[in-house]
Length: 171
Image 1: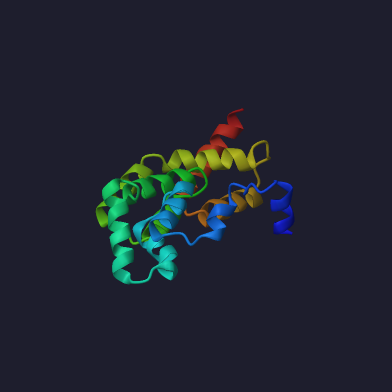
Image 2: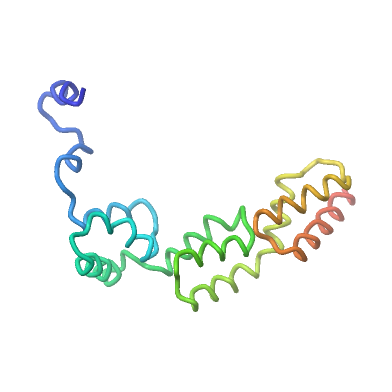
């Protein structure tokens, strides 16, 4: 099937096929991964390990990526927080950040940033999910479970539900 496509193109090789024919170097593979999204150093290490000939080679490639500014745990943390903050609470986001073995100072910085907006994020989630619904005890318990499963603390969930109810009863 592939040879038919190549013949149809009159000898021209399709753009993505050049990479399939040749073995990618470790640097090229790392840059290819990083062009798609941000990675933490341990995460990229795990992805590249099967393709490295030695651990020293892998460490030198990762050091080169960090020195050139292609690999940054700070950018990775910001990217992950930005990607998750509209759907999840602080506990869930910080758990995800912990899974990547990031620096403790970086985690503390993210914790402070997230704490500033957590109650607003919980209220907005309730507004998106439960808008235009009549308030019943079943709905309250459904809201509580919804926010708790997304990593919001119990006290914050109660406050968010109370403010959401107060807002929706006044309308």
